[in-house]
Amino acid sequence: MNRFAIALLVLASSFLRAGTKGENMGVFADLRSKDTAPQIQALGLGWVRIMYAWTWIEQSDGKMVWFEFDQWMARAKANHLKVLLVAQGSPAWANGGHGPYDRQTGLNTPPTPEFRERFAHYAAELVRHGADAVEIWNEPNSNGFYLPQADPKAWAELVVTAADAIKAVNPKVPVITGGVCPLPQGSENPNAPAKFLAAAIEAVPELLQKVDGIGHHPYVFANDPTAKDPLTAPYQWNAIQQTATMHEVLVRHGAGDMPFWFTEYGVPTGGPFGAVTPEESAVIYQHYYEAFDRLAKQGIKLGPSFFWALRDSRHYQQANALEGWEGVHDVDGNPKPSVAVIKARAAGAE
View 1 (tube, helix red, strand yellow):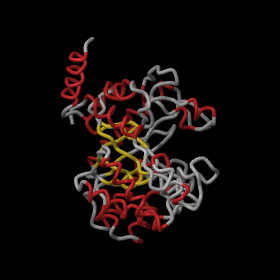
View 2 (cartoon, rainbow, N blue to C red):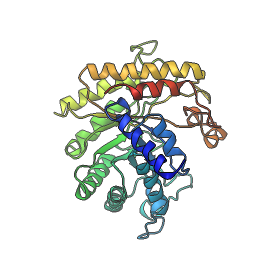
View 3 (tube, rainbow, N blue to C red):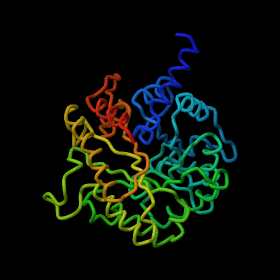
View 4 (cartoon, rainbow, N blue to C red):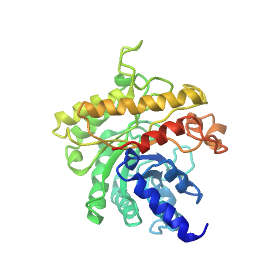
C-alpha cells in the first residue's frame, strides 16, 4: 500500500470517529513503538494518556532533552490522537537528591517548594511540545505515588502553580487534577478520593478556579461496577460511586459543573489479587460503561475516560504487580474479549 493510500485510510478513520463516544475515550500507553498509535486508533479511540516524567526530560539542571518525547507526539498526531500528558515526578536536583530509580524514587517524589516554579515550567513545556491536556500528578492521594506521603495542601499548591504556567502558554489547554485512586477501607480512609479532594480545596481555595476537570481512577477490580454500596463493608467501596461523593464536594464549593476525567480504570485478568477471567473482564467493562452512563444521568458531568492499559506488561508481571495483567491485549498482543466491548462503545453515537 502506498503512502497516499495510507494517508487516506488515516483521514477516513478520523472522520468515522467524529461524533462517536470514541472521541472522548482513550487508553494509557507509551508510544515507543511506531505500531502503538495505529493500534489505539483502530479501537476507535480519540485520546492517549502518557506519563512522561520531569526526571526523564531534565535530569541535569537546565538541560531539557525532548527528542523521544517529540517522537511520541509526532506518532500521536499522525494518527489523529489527542494526548493527555501526566506531569509527574522531579529530578534529583529538585527534590532533595532522590534519583529516578532509588528507593524514594524521583518518579513519585514532588519537587521541594523552591523548585515548584521549575516543575511548572516543565508542565508548560509539555504543552509547547504537543500536549492537548495536562494532568497534574498521578494518584496524589496515595502514599505510594506522592512520596514520602500524600499531602493535599502541598499537591494543590503544585497544581495551582503548574496551571498558571500552562495557561500562560495556551489558555485553552485543559488542566486536570491528578487522578485520585480508591484506597483500603474505602471511604473511611483519611485520603479517600472525596476526603482528599475536600482537604485540597479547603487548604487552597483557588484550586477550583485554576483547573478544568477533576481526575479520578474509579477502579473496582474484580467487583461489579454497577453494584450498590454497601455490600458486606460498612463503608463506600465502589470507586465509581465515590464519584458522586466527590461531586457533592464540588457542589458545596460552587463547582458542580466541573467535569470528571476518569484517567484510569481497568480489569485485571491475573496477578496477586482481584483477578477475573478474560471473559469476565468483558462483562465488567460493559458494566463500567453502564455505570458511567448512570452518573451522567444523575447530572454529573464527565470528560474523557482512559482505560489501563493497551497491553499486559511482562515487566509488571515479573514484579507480581497487578498492573501487569490489566491490558486489553495479552503480552503477545492477542486481544482479550474486552476489546470487542471497547470498540462497540467507541463506535456508539455521542
